[in-house]
Length: 493
Image (cartoon, rainbow, N blue to C red; front, top):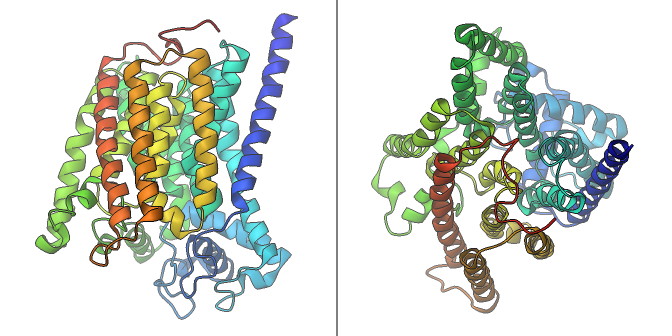
């Protein structure tokens, strides 16, 4: 009887957490989006709408090719086939509701109130299906035996991590889909359903190529686990077949013509764009402050440099995961690998930090102080983009809400050391100082991007320290996630 009541209360807690998560997302979606009212290119909102226009009106053979009806310099599709199929589905629905939303060539920059509502709904529906529900399943799997209030507050902290809310529901993107598929892959693997896990992650990779940031940990974990099974070769072959078949199905329309497949690959990896975009909080952008890398070295040299830097950064974590594959180490390795790619790889966007935010948020129940601080820095590092999009009010609101939730959870259920409190104090003071400077002082004409550079450089330094910490954490952890202690320095629940 008690177990039945507990299950019912758990379900209701999940429903309430989901409703709160959707409400906060909807509030953020009431703010401006990327490129609103800014012709001729507009922004990511127009990019997604334009992809719906292209996939709805053009044959699949023309989706990735330059043509009179597909100007690749105007938001040409540069994501894998699964994103294109998703845009086709959304485009068909849009065409049914109002054909003007996706009219070929004439709908560029379409921004009616009805269309904005439709676009926001498409993100929220995907978020619920692929991100919110899997997070609640994750919490049910790993936090089921925790105190009810603690479990509820931790669920909210994972669901409301500010960075993805601001980008997907403010700026406008569908990161929740690829990140959610990666999370689903982790859940399958945690349930010892490795073949389904391999399939789910392959789908994530075929939705957004930036999921390559997560690929090494999944590969290394499954390889290490397979080598310890009773039939290692058979399991490795089975996993390989699942990946190949899933890839084949996703790419099937493009495999009948070599030129088609090659063109898609070229669109996915445009090396000609440069080492990084805007003022991103990675090593190369920060180094560029004192060493003008893009002026001193050729494109090929920079590609080689970033490749070597990335490999060196991911190698210790990856080798360790093959040798000692556990779920907890997999989760930490997902942070290490994605953060290493963000800091050292080629052609990095500021939004790519979201790929590290997903596994960091899942580690919150076990390392709330460190993970919470990382998520705050991740949002802060994107402030120049958020200001550009007119999302600074939403940023302030969600940051304050998240900081309050963090404080209440840690104060009630965790013993936070003086050193951890000191790190929070210093971090908040640095963020406030930069915000205060940017709102009061006009940057000198010689350095118009001074504030953006300050934000990217300070965030990069913090990310480097987090990379060292999470690598250390992976090497010293000894238990699996299912039996890992949630509260190491416990207060009474």
